[in-house]
Length: 437
Ligand SMILES: Cc1cc2nc3c(=O)[nH]c(=O)nc-3n(C[C@H](O)[C@H](O)[C@H](O)COP(=O)(O)OP(=O)(O)OC[C@H]3O[C@@H](n4cnc5c(N)ncnc54)[C@H](O)[C@@H]3O)c2cc1C
Image 1 (tube, protein in one colour):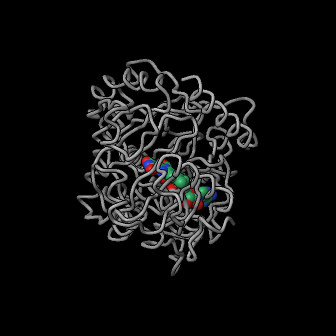
Image 2: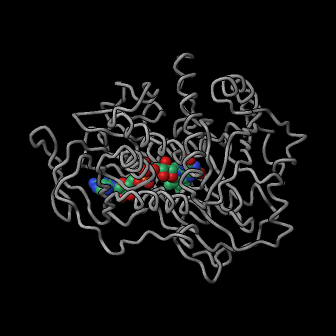
Image 3: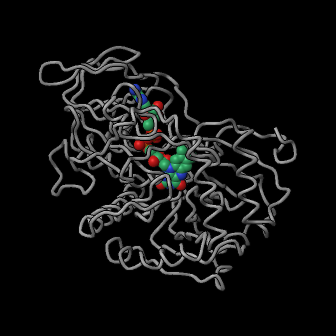
């Protein structure tokens, strides 16, 4: 451990867990049967369960670990309406036909509206605010390519996006680090673990069975439905929803071949002097950038700490490895933070897809919603909701992410052995881009 960046009370767990810590608690018994069994208890699984319950459909959530173990209590809490859609883990934006792009963005905009509505309807106290986002341009060329995307974002997703020049950048961030960037007004932020807890409470109010420590180990056809084997007993279910995102494993090999689990890491600082904290991000927006190996950051809900994330490594590594790297990224942007100590550092998995788009649908008779591609607070909530509405036959239009084409690759079997090398290569490419402008 590098001593001078770690606070004496440093913990290698999410800062958010100070407010809600995933616990197994008193285990809810796994029922013998349910109309719908949902595998995975993150935002997607809970949002699906909540909507099914609203339609009077009895469902069970089966979570392998504690409730909230996955990315849903570990993320940065930045909520977007689609600005990163199509951006792969290489940072490259994968092209889609304009007509499809419009539908994809329009559904992303609906995802933002859904989370806004859900928080209001379920009265979830999670520090939900809509201050907008600033996406810093890593190079001049990136600034130009951001400018070219404005019209589409504003037309299809009502993003309220506009460019901010390098000269005016200090209105957004107390740093000259970027070549200007893009503001996306229709973006928000929340406390991810409190949002998660709010979804849990909403499910409990509707008597959804929420079963922690119930890893699903096998699925088999049983009559017209499914036999679901869990580590705490078996049940029969009419339908099954797979909501395992970056933790998708050998239970569903066909899905595992279609998602690449990539680690993302975050650090949180000690409380900063109030004047310093207030000065860093004057408008309280969330920030990210256009690098291949992107960073994302914001202030904590009480405005006292910097919460700074990025792909310090593409795989799960110890905080002693990820925290010094993120610390350097943070102080590259904010030299005024040199010397502050870190109280928390943690990691979690996101799921990238080969076309950089989220997906829902059915494979081999199983419903699934997967592939947040790094931005899933609103999107995975939405895909869970859409999946439930499809099952309840309440959907009055086909979601743009519900398509047959969920690409795989003949050389990828679900083991992302190549990620460390890829991460190194992308970091080099980022540095080269910066040098070449
Ligand atoms: C560090 C980090 C930062 C992020 N920052 C942001 C951000 O700022 N904004 C944003 O929009 N998104 C962000 N994300 C992404 C966002 O957190 C995810 O997209 C979202 O939480 C995914 O929700 P989910 O329900 O699909 O999956 P998860 O919350 O990951 O839940 C999946 C669950 O499935 C369970 N599971 C797996 N296999 C089984 C099995 N066989 N049986 C039972 N259960 C199983 C796992 O234990 C896990 O709990 C970030 C993610 C990380 C890791």
